Image (cartoon, rainbow, N blue to C red; front, side, top):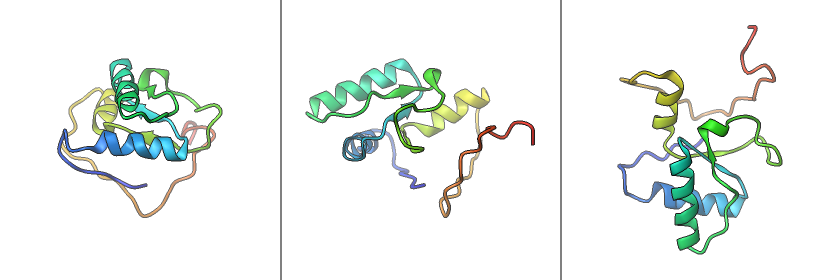
Length: 106
């Protein structure tokens, strides 16, 4: 996993749109409004991307590989946890396999 940590309005989403177009991988984002914004930005850039997937349509990404691109991961994490996150860590050295049970029953 690669982490792009830059301030807001510095081109992170634009770069993710270009990667989505080249890899044909969808972008997962927090809300329907974010999905619309990403799609509109891609159209203004004259770039074709797979339809962005808002968190509310989460689930298996049918028709795609086991990979996705994530925009605003901090917002998505807070939506899942439903609390303000003071600090978080990410491990970037390895990719973790997707558990068929998603961790349930362990």
